[in-house]
Image 1 (cartoon, rainbow, N blue to C red):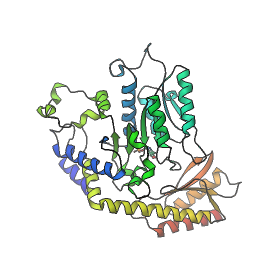
Image 2 (cartoon, rainbow, N blue to C red):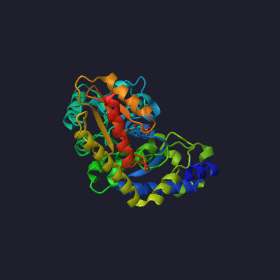
Image 3 (tube, protein in one colour):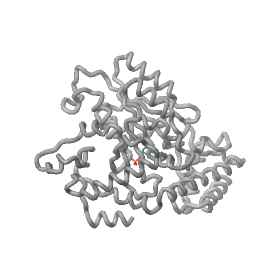
Image 4 (tube, protein in one colour):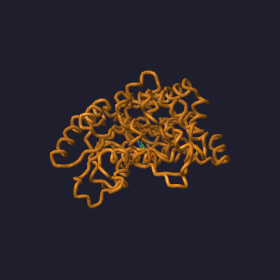
Length: 380
Ligand SMILES: Cc1ncc(COP(=O)(O)O)c(C=O)c1O
């Protein structure tokens, strides 16, 4: 919050190195630290955007740039030389992937959602089959999105297997680790990003689960040159002599020209908590989620409906007759308490309640209160 005060007061513009050397270079420093923390190779260069939706949009713009000849100048409309383009993701991938293909002019039909297994993870075998089928139909696969921590159930797609397929098919791999990517810094959780080093890009959101005030999303890209190829454009009035001296001009890695000094708050978060502090908060959140999950598992009233790899628990009433309306009433009743705020989703077509832990002030007492409220609401 202090960083937000400061950056508002100083009103830095990090469009060019010249307009804010500090904002430009601090971004590089903070993103280098975060990259090391989550175990991504040095080949990944980072850039800060506002949200994961915008990060994914840029990743898929780069994928389009890499795969569609002349797209920057000729666009897509009316192209006789171009068959339909395809992007792949799991049926559980976030809606930001749909929005990206819509905005990139590929059309929502270009997004093929691949079925998941019983634990809500994308089935790599079906991804391979879908690509083969589309190629046989004359379509052009350009990218796949693997999710590490899907929105509804926090499932983890098999990134390694997906990376293998993308390498074989020579298509762009984007990893959406917006929520869960930060957990890779906790000892024992490195596996969640296994294979991500082979991805072309990865998004992780410190504003979701790294205690950074909204907004701050990071896109790491192993082929930032492609993103620059897609977006860099320097009219006379933006030319600076440093341009030739090899400094970074952040306007080159995205659609925005002007940009806020967001790096300051990430730098402060990293400096304030330190690696150990961040790890211990994340580990505690996961412990609290496991504790809550154990209460659900031992209960006669509720049952868990998904594994709990991180800090979200999905559950519903055991009573087979309980439908959407009963669950929605429970949710309203619990939230009306003002003590806790739960959300819902649908998994396998059924209404599911979700408890998510991500705030540094949340303790076991709050989780116990949620459980108490849930039980009394179910009784009512
Ligand atoms: C997996 C995943 N990706 C992307 C997003 C979009 O995040 P943002 O609000 O930063 O665009 C979300 C938000 O819930 C998400 O869960």
